[in-house]
Length: 185
Image (tube, rainbow, N blue to C red; front, top):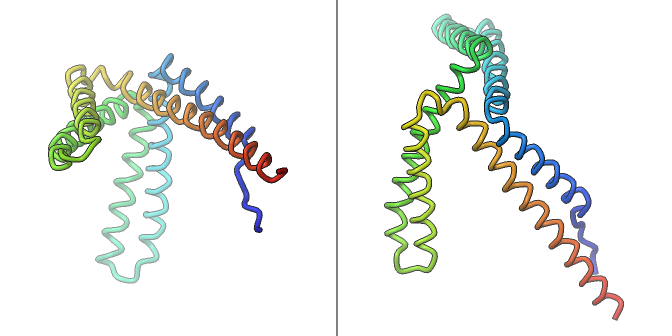
């Protein structure tokens, strides 16, 4: 019989606890977490722009060279702008989130009715209503929602992920224990 590798329960447990702590911090200080996320996005844009710009010089044709250089410069300017003005970046990101949640909510509500005979269609309908409400809430408080929306949503995601990792660690630990009991019989 072959041995299968299972994840370390202590690693899952400690990772889950760390995510819960970071999630709580993000919810307690959403503007700080939102700023951190926007700074990472700005840095990614800046690095991407530099890579595109450098790549533009390697293009053989002037038509593709010019397009790549211009795209690189635009991406660099966007990255610098986001890094220089993270609050504006959070406001824009909040607007994008509001639109995303509204579209997702409408789609889920419509799609839930196509699953209506199946069990669980109400869960999808409920999820769509929640997404639509989140989009409306962010939109209604926009641009001020930029100061809280990104951080709160990331915090909630970290909390849920942390709790699921702890639950997974406990399940793996229980399964290992039951397998050891079966193996010793």
